[in-house]
Image (cartoon, rainbow, N blue to C red; front, top):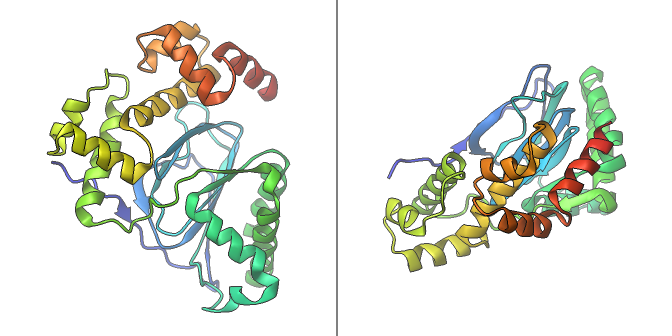
Length: 289
């Protein structure tokens, strides 16, 4: 079995600062499955793409604001067709202001936010626009002003419950045995490369040297999803991407996303998004306009 263990990234704080802030004025691609002990706040100004945080897969458009907990594997975040204007990445260790700083009463909200970030959180609506503007201004601030801005931003994010979506990836942090890391990441990469092909449990189970029943139990324990649901979720996110970006028929989108049965695609798409594919495309078009 080929090794696809997620890469551990070593991150050094910015000079004169207790955390790292990096701005990218070109397309920010992070297709490599990776993790790091730092909590990461990612603001993508415009653009669209897929995001994978733990076993969660979703599509974003018109930019993204996502908070990723410590040691939570992730990848994606940009698209090759519709590009972003710029990207700001803020990374901080959970105790970047001292071991007990977040235990004081005034920091209760931020401590709670860091705990919630273990599952991954994405923010939309007014929060994405408001916080995105504040993050964009941080690059021009002095180190002290930048720190105050970060604390303010984190506090506001904890209060923005109406715009927060929890990605439910908790339990998928890099606390598994090395063999589990290797196995699950081989599976993830296999799905990324082959999601358009028919799902065959026997094939993937054989590739990771397991029986089908053992593989099904193992995958459900690690990801809290069945393998079939995980593959279908990946296909449905790809369908959302195509609905936003390609002026082709919905039946063609279903086929290009790996569904050979159109009625089955319609049923799963409505369960996944809460609306049928034509309504989803119409609403997204209206929103972007």
